Amino acid sequence: MESQSGFTKYSIDEFEIWISKLKVARTVLYLQQHHTYSPHYGLFNRSNHFKLQEAMRNYHVNENGWADIGQHFTIFPDGSIMTGRSLEKSPACIFQNNANSICIENLGNFDTGGDQMTPVQQESIVRATAAMCQKYSVPVTTDYVVYHHWFNLSTGARNNGSGGNKSCPGTNYFGGNKVEDCRNHFLPLVSAALTETIVIDTSTILKYACVTTAQLNIRKQPVYTADLVSDRDPATLGAIIRVYKIQNGWFKISSSKNHWVSGRYTADVVPGLVNADILNVRNGPGASFLKIGAYLKGTLVFVYEEVNGWCKISMEEKWVSRTFLDLQE
Image (cartoon, rainbow, N blue to C red; front, top):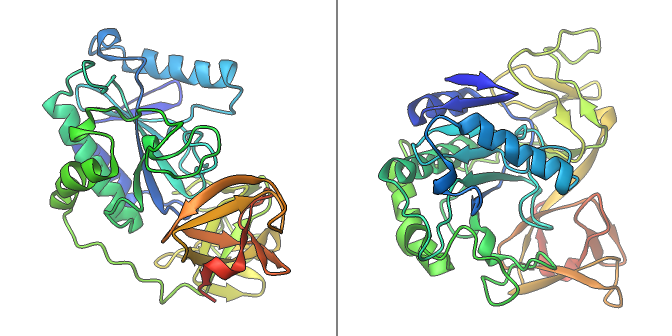
């Protein structure tokens, strides 16, 4: 393990241990797979990991105008894994689809005719993906482990690569960038790398809530005078948190530890599953409003409010018809 410029570089063995112990307040539902395209293998010399990561951060901040580097992790050709954006913050990687996601950027150009992925990078990608699926109970399916190529660049609608899409993570990424390629070539490797069966148990969750302040401190007891926890960062604006216990207006957000936040700085949300083959997203509560995206059947969203049969599914103006959601109230 080595740290520099706010980033930490791990071997895959170190990463698996670190991620298994990491506490994150934000609910993680999706893992995004990307390639950097540039920088590519020709710019990597086995000793310039931090230089390349810093260059990506500078580009994202100074050219794109983002608050930080877009991705949470970068996986290098030598198999090392470097941290990026805080896991308490949504990534800036797939337009309209960053909430509740972790973004993995794999350094290289994995389009056909580009870089030939090294065996050690392949192993790290598979094992890191498996470790995060296991840690955050992410199902190893193409509904939840997703490629950038499956989302329209202009609208963010998932169209599985039918038009207006980037090739990312590459047309030769683990046998291709199509849904069936992922299902047939990548996900079986991830499933084989799991060390335990993924169990999705929501029975102990009382409710979900959205953080409504820029930074929400996490304390050891449900009082403002309690010490801050030392093993996790504060939750940030827009994060969806799981609530396991409520006491005097305070929410316990860990199933295993006394980690509490003030409910005063949150708003309740309700999870819902899309039950239509394609569900249009509009910028207001009605069919006359502009279509700004779409979700496929089985996508999990969180409802912030309901108006005349329409559900707001973001802190921004993103609305879908209540008819096509199965709310888990």
